[in-house]
Image (cartoon, rainbow, N blue to C red; front, side, top):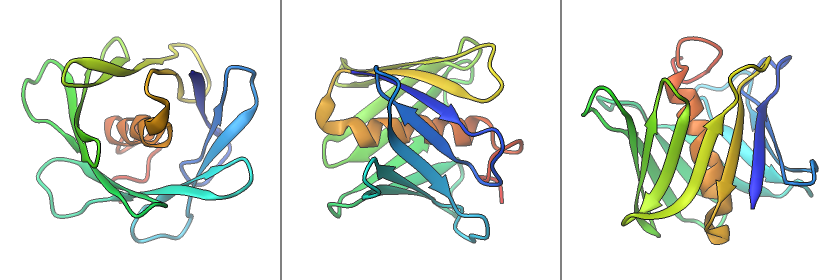
Amino acid sequence: MKYLIKQKIFSLTDSFEIEDETGQVVITAKGKFFSISSSQTLYDQRGNELLKIKRKYLTLLPACKLLCADGSEWLIRKCFWPFWTSRFTITGPAGELEINGNLWQHEYKISRNGTPLAAISKAWFSWSDTYGVEIFEPSLTAQLLASVIVIDRIQHSGRNSNLDD
């Protein structure tokens, strides 16, 4: 399934709309304006909470937790080495996932034990951050889409993101 993640331009918080292949908004991600924890919440079309993205404090490298509605927790961490790539790990109930990408080309792949779970591509020329995401593992859709938002927050902390509060 293919999705398009678009950051809202005129928003005081990090807010995103996620569209499916037909162009229908299926998930929204809303941040809070006055929030100490700099969290975001993902909602489905009916307004049901899918998960929360919360910044993890007191870490050497940037990290965020995904708190799912089913009670499961996922931890996304930026990897330190090697410097010339953009790497993250996701630890959760589905095991350890890896996000490998090229920061300069804005292309990422999420995999588990070498099996691709998602492919991510950032649009070069758009008014707001826009990502195309193809998901190969439908059972992890919310977590994989939230991971793209976390990558955006971490890669753009300091400008247009509430990760660096």
